[in-house]
Each structure stands twice: as structure tokens, then as C-alpha cells.
Image 1: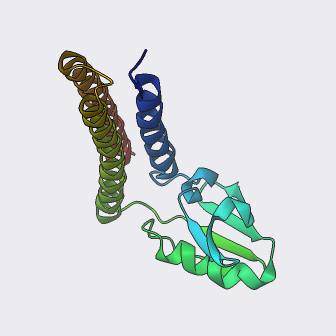
Image 2: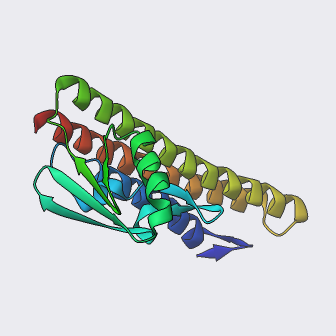
Length: 187
């Protein structure tokens, strides 16, 4: 459904991407159960850039309440430990050579509240990403109308479509957040 030069499929795809990122980030917020995906959102400053942790180490779950991170480059162990410690996940890594052990604390009410705050922050980032896609699409529509590529009516119709996409994606984000909040508070 391409009209003028605004591809609604592309707008939808970009919004879907923001929701998918949120889904992965929330998947990493485990309510007291060890999961290798818990560390997925962590980036480490290494080799003069920020890199995902999973490109520098392997993460495993040897026990239900323990994660281990096997860092491949000995020189990066400190950087990986620092990234894990300074993440918003409230983890306390313990270094043993190239291996980093991360015991998962029992979830206190305070810890649950912290995780809910992190989930809210992730959801807000996703909403902002969706709104940015919306803004880009609306700016594009204004330009197309100004250039005479689309009519005023076509602009209005496409703007309504973009708004409907935005509303659907924000609603999906809110549902993911609600579900995660329930998971965190009931474990």
C-alpha cells in the first residue's frame, strides 16, 4: 500500500521492530529464575565500541539461580564485569579468571519493584521509538503534500492510517508491560 512515497508497510515494520526489541528486553527481565537472555540487553565497551555481551562471551545457566559468563578475551573480563554490575538488573558478578559467576538474588518486594521500574523504562523507550517512527511518517506526508505528490485528502487519509498503526503498537507495548508486571509481582 504505497501512496506517493510513503510506504505504510515500512512504517509498520519499523514500529513492529520497536515492539520486538521490547519483547526481547522484557524477556531478559526474569523474575528470580536464571535465564541466559537476562543479560541480552547488556552492552560492553570493548574494542573502541559498545558491543553486545553475547559477542564477547558465552552465557550459561548451570543452576536455576546462577548464571555464568565465560569471557573469551581475558583482557575484557573487567569491562564485562563492570557492564553487568552497572546494568539496571541489580546483579553482583563474581570473577574467577575468565569466568564470571552471577548468583541471582531471591526476589524481595523491593527487588520486584526495581524490576517493574526497569520494565516501565523499557516500555517507555519502545513507545518513544514508535512515536519517532510516527513523527517521521507525518513529516514525510507534509513534505509530499507540499511537493504536490499527494492531495490534502490523501495526506489526511494516510495520516489517519499512521495514527492507527501508532495506537495499535502503543497498545501492544502496554499489554506486554502489563503481562510482565504481573509475572514479576506473582513469582
